[in-house]
Amino acid sequence: MTSADSPAFRSVAPAEAFAELAAHIEGAVTTPADAGWDAARQAWNVAADQHPDAVIAPSSAEDVQAAIRFAEQHQLRVVAQSTGHLAAPLGDLAGSILIRTAGLSSIDVDPEALTVRVGAGVLWADVTAALAEHGLMGLAGSAPDVGVAGYLLGGGVSWFARSHGLATSHVTEIEAVTGDGRVLRANADEESELFHALRGGGGNYAVVTAITMRAFAVRDVYAGMLLFPLERADEVLTAWEAWTREIDETATTSLRLLRVPPLPELPEFLRGQRFVAIDGAIAVEQAGGGADAAASDAERSAAAAATLAPLRALGPIVDTFGLMPASRLGEVHMDPPGPVPGGGDGANLSDLPRAAIERIVELAGPDVDSPLLAVEIRHLGGALAVPAPGGGAVDSLHGRFLLYAVGITPTPEVAAMVESATTAVLDATREWHSGIDYINFRESQVAPERLYPAATLTRLRAAKKQYDPAGRIHSAHPVH
Image (cartoon, rainbow, N blue to C red; front, side):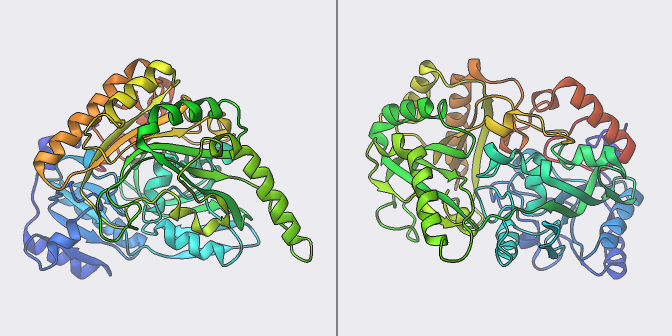
C-alpha cells in the first residue's frame, strides 16, 4: 500500500485543473486564490490551521466521486470533513483536497420503520429537531453542532450510551465513495467489510455520503446538571465514583472539574466561575397519552429522582435535573455553541481508585491555577461494556470511564500551556489507562494499536487495502 504521507501525494494540481473540476460538478471548488478561502478551509476547532490544496463542497455522491477521481489523476490525498471538531490529528494537509460535506444535508425520517437517513453533512441539532417532530430521538452526543457522520464513524457516546450502547451499533446502512472511486451501499448483507470498518474504524476507507440509523420512540428524559463549588472537588468526585458503582444502566453521567470562561453570552452566575459539574440523563419509561399521562410523568420522575438522590444529598448549589424533552439533551452539557480554538486529549480508564482521584484533583482542582477549561470523566459500563451483536469495528468500549482534558487556546502561548496541562493529567493517570482508547476522544496523533485490539486492526487494515488500495484517503486516525 502506498503511504498517504509519501512524496507521491505531494503533487500540486494547476489552477486550470481545479477550474475544470468546478465546471464538471454541481458543488463548489475553492482554492487559495479565491475569495472565501479562509472560511472554506476553517475547521470547527479553529486551532487546526488547515491548508489543503483546495476545498471541495460536493452536493451529491457523484460530486464526491468526481473529486476522488480528480485526486487520483493529480496524485492528491483526500480528506473528508463535516465540521472539523477532530481536525487537530489530521496534521499537514499539503497535497490534499479537503471535501467539506455540509452540502450533503438531506434528512429523511421514516417514523414507521423507526429509522432516519441523513446526509454526511448533517449536524446533530438538525436531525434531533427532525426526529422530535415524530416523537423520536437519535443517540446524539453532548454537542448539538457535531456532525452526525464523524461522530458515528468513531463510535458515538450518547446520554443513553449505558442503556443503548454505542450509537454506531444502531447504524443500518452507509452510502460512501471508496478510495478507488466506487459508489457503494454498505450494510450487513452488502459490502459487509466496509460496513464493519466504517462503524468505529474512522473514515479511512471511503468518503461517507449518507447514513441510515435507528431512531427511538423517546419523547422525554430525566436530565440536567448539578453544580458544586470547585473547592469540593475531592469530596464530590469521590462520592460520584462510589455512586457509579451502584447505579443501573439507565443512568449515563459525566463529571467535570470546570473553569467557565468569562464570556459575556453566559449567565452571570456561571461567567468566570469554577465548579464541579455532574450532568447527564436517566432513561425513563415513556408516558402514554390520555388522563394517566400526568400521573405517569410524576411516577417516572420519582423513580429517576431516587436514582439521583445520593448525589443530590451532597447539596449542589445548582440543580437543573428534571423531566425534559429528549430534543433538549443538547443543552445539558453546555458545549461551546460555535467554532473555538481548542486543544485536548483523552484516554479510557480501567478504574478510578482513590490514588487516581487525588492526582486529578491535584492537577485540576481548587488549589491549582489550571489553563484547562475542563477535566471530564464520563461513566462507561452497562451496555457499552458488552459487544453489540453484529456491531462494527468498535462495538463496545474498554474500561469504566472516559477521561478527557480540554482547554481553549486563543494564542500559541496558551496552546502550549493547555498541551502541557493535558499531558500532565494523562501522565498522572497512566497506570489506570485501559490500553485501548475511544477514537473520538483522542485528539493527538497516536498509533492505531492504541485504538483497536490486534484482531480488529488486522481486519481494518485489510478493509483499507480492499477499498482504498492506493492509500488516498487520509483521516484523523489512520490505520496503516
